[in-house]
Length: 417
Image (cartoon, one colour):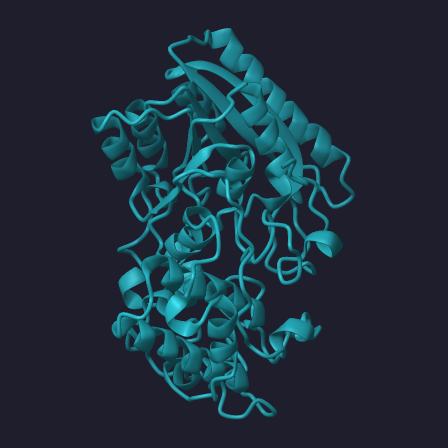
């Protein structure tokens, strides 16, 4: 199957497409959806056909999906609970589970979508008292109250079935994987749960078609690559050590570490709460604060080493630990790790080459002016066992910097400093 890598919103909208590569992809900072042609080019440069592809920071699962479509057996890892569920659904599951206890998959989705709304944890903590007259200064507006009640009701039902032993692991992952997307789709946010719009859709009433739509679960799209794929929920370094220690042969290791200081556990804390359904206590919303409702246990405990000044050391250690035929690293000229430091760490591991392109930077609001509207995204290709000379590192660095300079100077928003 030849994947369609050039994303277009009309053809590949996650809510409606039947294309496995894009279906039910959550809105995600760092989502590689639009970078797939670049990443695929890097994969093709390795001239690797089949074998094990390990995605160490799998996030929304889109690169792991691409690897499945390219014929690899795939291990998809991410230590965030919501991402582990998404990857179990999209990567581990090759086909729809039987749901024999419910008379099939169609029946279980119909049952869930027909459940009566029920006010519960989400409704009480993340929704207004009255959808027609919400107060963003004293209430949280992550969801309409109508949708909050549906999220509560469906999640409670899944939890009850799970507690009763009616759901196999794959079945649970499929229901919750669908729920991760559905929760994101109806959220009154721009995709990040650190805050919500003032009023439904904000000042411009953006995306009311989804925010005010009825919350419901839809069956995911699957792809059967005839391989025993697996999702992990581990720190990337821990997984690398485990695979090395058991002598697991890896054809391609793919690294997409966090680029900045913002932990995914806080950006997507609502998804983690729905995934875990542990209902942590939250402070009341007030004019004085408490807007984001970020779980206190995720503020620092789940922050990756890549969110700190330790990022470069963590990356170098991970490279040294991984044993693979090829190691690919997606990164950006805006990343925490200085470009030269990143390149030198990669070059120390083997023969280094690179593919790159300029892309629009992520913005919370499309209305905001940006002094640097573009950056260069690149994929480093390391062949362990080879060698890279200092002048070759210089050439790669110069090529990346030149690509960024050319793209920025041609952009109408760029301000010369």
